[in-house]
Length: 284
Image (cartoon, rainbow, N blue to C red):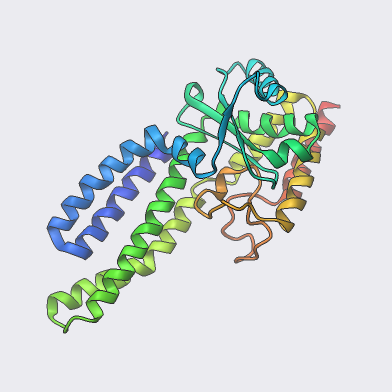
């Protein structure tokens, strides 16, 4: 929860800085109010926002019995409330968990995951997502997605503001405002990167470990991760965005070469497989 609070405070300060750069003290006050409202919205509704972004449809034991039963079995084993279950109409296999706590959680799998994976591999993937729920790190991931999107929006606003200032005859005030705006434009992408990097790579290792012990079969997740990595190298999800990439079990942009793995929120698949293999040897 502390990381989530820090993110919310950081967003509020960032909004205030941008508001001040655009419209001075009045702009800063307006931005403070807007950021406060957004924090409340993010806490209660960010999960719904992400699910809607991916056109996720809630399923039941009647409409998707195998998937629902797998999640139900895992929830019982983990001692967790039954989360809502969603299917994303996307052929590239992937999955994520969202929600503000275990009592308000949801797990979502793409149609491609259900079509291309064996039931055991699907269970390994969903055990990973249920581990995220149990570790209570689903809220920060979902809120960070909304924050990163807000920062991208702010960056666009500031670019427009800087362009407008350049077309106005220079004055001392305009010069200061333009300098602030230019600085904001430079800092926005950096801030978005920092926010995504607060989603620690270690949480993926912990979720993998939790899945291995929850199913008792680390090889199920190992097989699934190998396939998921292969698909993500070749195909990209249609609706995937950099703001939500950290939420998925594997990065949907693995095939896009950007600054290597330096700023990735996911550890390498090879490292994850090595860790799971050690657990498999231990369980044997």
